[in-house]
Length: 236
Image (cartoon, rainbow, N blue to C red; front, top):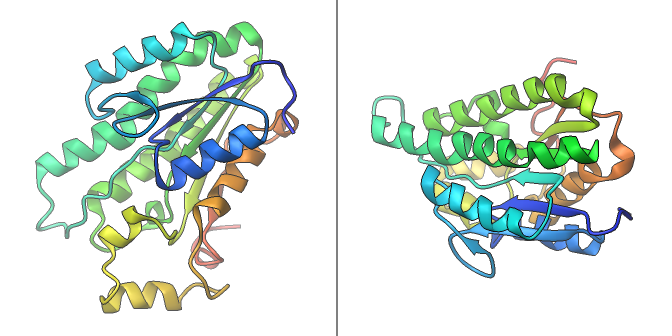
């Protein structure tokens, strides 16, 4: 369990789905949770908009230093390469990638002052490649790149950066992009070696490990929480 007094963690998109499960797990682990989302009990903001994001970050930091962050917010924008619009690509970039950069930059001074920090980024198995996911896969792969760079740049300050790549997780986001009656969806589920969908709590458990003070020698890594789907897809 994390025991530092008043250790605060920011969870973006923490009002529902995986983000809500992570926020709940952080509270159970003894952390003070700050959520930025456009709904629910949170600091309300449109994280796809830099101005709205900046205002929310100012409000979050007004309550005190934040030394941990879970960059969770994201959207899928499904479509083939021929159908994917440039507007969707820009929207995916701003919400999935730019918000992670902006939110992390805002708390780096707090982490440096504390000589401690934990950055967790929710990427996706789709970063390895998935049909109908040009915008989504590109931004989720970009998040893995950010994770690796930040681990190198911030390690000397006691800050770790790690990513989680969920596979099929039972959330509204998954079902919205993967219709239950679609043969493509059925093929995804049949390919899971553990023979079940993942849960938001599965991802939250992985995030808890990366956020823990005792995980300071693990950084720059991507953990696929996917029921074994990536076996054979990722190099040893």
